Amino acid sequence: TMGMFAWSTLEPDEGRFELDWLEDRINTLHDNGIHVILATPSGARPKWLSDRYPEVLRVDETRHRQLFGGRHNHCFSSPVYREKVRIINERLAQRFAKHPAVILWHLSNEYCGECHCEHCQQAFRDWLQRRYGSIDALNDAWCTTFWSHTYHSFAQVESPSSRGEHQMEGLLLDWKRFVTDQTIDFIKAEIAAVRPYHPSLPVTTNLMYSFDALNYFKLKDVVDIISWDTYPQWHKQAEIVTALDNGLQHDLMRSIKGTPFLMMESVTSATNWQGVSKLKKPNMNRLSTLQAIAHGSDAALFFQWRQSRGSVEKFHGAFVDHYGEQDTRVFDEATLLGAALQTLREVIGATVHAPVAVVYDWENDWAIGGSHGPRNNGMKYKDAVKKSYTALRKLGLDVDIIDMECDISKYRFVAAPMLYMLRNDFDTALRSYVSQGGLLALGYFSGIVDESDRCFQGGMPHNLMDVTGLRMTEIDGLFDHEHNKLCPVNGNSLRMHKHYRCDTLCALVKTSTATTLMTYGKDFYAGTPAFTQNNYGNGSAYYICADAEQDFYDDAYAAILGQADIHADLNIKLPEGVEMNTRHKEGVRYVFLQNFNTTPVQIDVPDGYETLLGSGGELGSFGTLVLKQS
Ligand code: GLA
Image 1: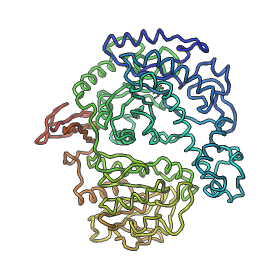
Image 2: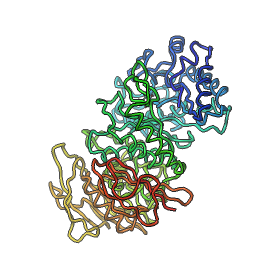
Image 3: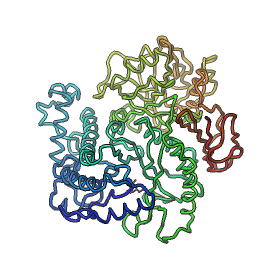
């Protein structure tokens, strides 16, 4: 994949285009049987552009215009920037869209950032007008009478600023929504420039790890393929902990479109931008690359081919380092990895059929982050998502990560931690899901506010009190040094028998039809429900009242899913530190087993499976076994 930061070479001065060098390179690659993903260069603009048209430079939230430099420092609303991007994109498309080597457009690079210039202010006001129709509706949604902030026209609304309005939740949420929509509008303009020259050439854009600022689910129908850049810090903690964290991101990326994604960037060994540039130990590059394939990637690309001589990324890992030859540890390992990928060719296109899902919703994350209580020292939403995910992965299950706009009817179990905000009628979707036989694990601090962050009145979790068989009466924020515990009720239906620690938040509930499985062990609410179950229609809803430790999730989910006979296709007990993923294609099942331990584990090939990669028996440290069942 090439050309993402090549604008100043492609158009050294306004209107003077030099594309021959790029054609030479693409021809050379093509002659050697290598395909090309071609980038549009909008991620960093040439100096002449911002010198001649300063409006393309971003204005920050304090209303100061940025200087030239870095990358992604341009306004997505600027008509001039859009026009200049259109022109260079069209030039590239005219010349290369039909080149036989070119297989995919790579739009820009890691879109990010926001701008507060007058173009953006106006676009934001227009966006609000479309969303609310009238200023009264906006005032109502944002509860502006509080602190006397009532607006009389859309023209009065300004984007959030630390020098001005920076606390009004409705404004903050809508600004974040707008930033996503405006970025997408820019992406669509980039697509419109290249599309006409080869309408069936697909487009992608590379996304980032746990990136808060853009709601990536909104790209579902905008790009043809989801791709992302993954740079986990291996060897910092137990490898399986890093693997689960990275695996969650792979699963999130795959879930956006529900089709295979591309690992657009990773590194052969160390990056240079993390706090410590740790080398990947022998076999880690192979293991982490195959992890992407296991989770549904159809590609393994690396930044970068050759280490640059100078500038910001001169120490970033590459296939070919400054030495310039092939006889290096990294190159040897890359060669072996290439051979493994060849073996796995037939897996390309295989999909993942997850029986379970965990809800992670960007807008909910934004809302929790700005909720002003009940715990401004950290609500730990992402940690809560990760705990549910981890527990399911330990059972060897493939897991989709979904938001409140996804269809949940196909899953047998849905975990919805901290569903603070309810939007897009997700409460209704949950009701019908459970009544039709679904299993739901709803977390504390759920069903609290609507999409404008206005609290629901008449009881919480809103519209789910009959589904969960309880009402949350209060919620206790715990100091960092405090904790409570969950204690089993004798004879509970899940046979939970251990005590578990909980931190952060403890919801106090009053049950109506729910059965109490565990109670709190301490404080004035000792003995009141801490974990409950309620039958609703043909399904069942569990309510987890507090931020329980990982062991609780592991044991509770194992019990719930065990009772419902929900298990991975290959129903084995996974050794600790091993990940299992399954991909499906034309009736064939590919099971990936990966050992993230520093010691070997025993995995015997079950009846009905053959090995595609590796061999059964002892699976070495950082080893991968791929089984095939037809
Ligand atoms: C990102 C960028 C690349 C490069 C790498 C370095 O993912 O897209 O251009 O800067 O980081 O790790």
